[in-house]
Length: 640
Image: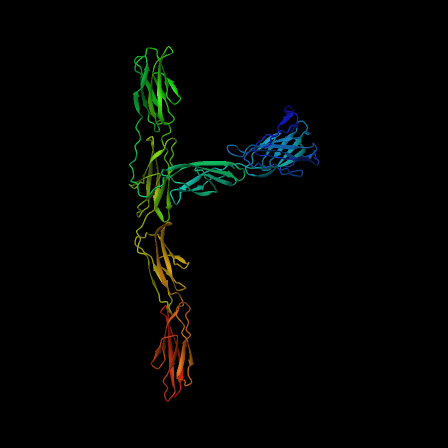
């Protein structure tokens, strides 16, 4: 941000309207920049009163540069008019990003203004101000034309306009995200739930905590599992499209250890240490005999903290002796009794010196083991239904617990239905009943210091129903004058009131209801699926094959006949029958003389007699749907 430092004769401020400025134009480095140019033109009419705020005398526009980083901005310039020469508008703004807010400070520079002049400001957003220096807060981002009027004795001596760009308020986003388990125990799905009051979020950046990163509002990441459970700190950074303001959210996730198969029996819940430890001893040296160090500690687990209290027993020490302590961690103390808090777990050598008249009479050392601070874990977890519609009784549980120092050594799950599980990641299938159920799931974790933390939350399991048996169906005859219509009936035993039967008939058409009718157009084998739901939850699903003959499966019989020899005793009969859907599977001929045939094409030789004879020939064609149709024709066999 370019900042102009002005040497100003402020004493003249009360005497002159706008500040007269000597511009030394030094530049400091900061985010944001602004620029503007001023020019004076036109004349003013001192006899006219100030125009209304909506009027904007003069021409031309000066636009400051909008910062590309979330800092403030500065600029100056203006398009002037009037009788007092150039009128310059100078401005600066504070940074728009939280915890700051963008506030514009405007200053008028009008060297030609007489003493006692006043200044009216119109900020272009419906608000106004007064004074040589004035401030304004723009609620919304946008470009605004700022107008300042120089007035003396109620006459406008001149005015200037300058175009500025405001970034607006509430442009800093709030970062948030969810982390849920994916298809495998090493997969996590991260979804940004970040929000911003004004503008849009431009960038979504992810640091998955394992040395890899990603971008976009939704990311699926696969972690590398090891033989032990691992915790990763995931950092999500979002920035505003308008201002570049940034917000960050972090969350700790746990990836369970890889398993080689089999099951682990649930472990009993661990117990919290009731108190601290105590001990006494020491290795002495010096002229006053044995020196004993005794100690006692408070419990290390929250809400307590581990604090060591040391006492020295030196029976041979003369009256007036002093005691100096060195706790082995860089800390020291004094007195017969003293305390120390070890921040880090470990073994420490405690030294006490007995002194009199600044002479060391003896000393003793003793090793103590400290558990340290921050050894109580914080329990947390999330529960997820893999598919609330189809498997609403199957949950995955993933611990997101954390520990400042040390390691979490035990995860025990109480699923709320009398069963338990172990491990940082666990799954459980609840037994469904005819009513919906709610279970309180409790996670108990233990640190390597023996400190325990618990977390509980409820999960809901929808009602389950014992539905079986598939569906049944009947169909009407496909042969004319009838047509094939299927009637499907779904199971009813165990189906609750209000359940919805949804059918997929396998031909791209579905329907709801029970029973339900269906007509297929074409002959085929179709896979029919019935799904029964209640309150958008699936209760039952079954698929069965159904074979349809379709529509228009009755043939149309027709005959083509032709004499086959010169005597007229042999005749060729050919079926020209058709069927719209399906095939003709059989042909039955009755030649009218007591003989028959069975092919689509036949040559029939009649026995000639002394007189001519007429025979009626009948063809019956049958389709694969077992639908039949007949046609007849006549032939005349001449006399021999």
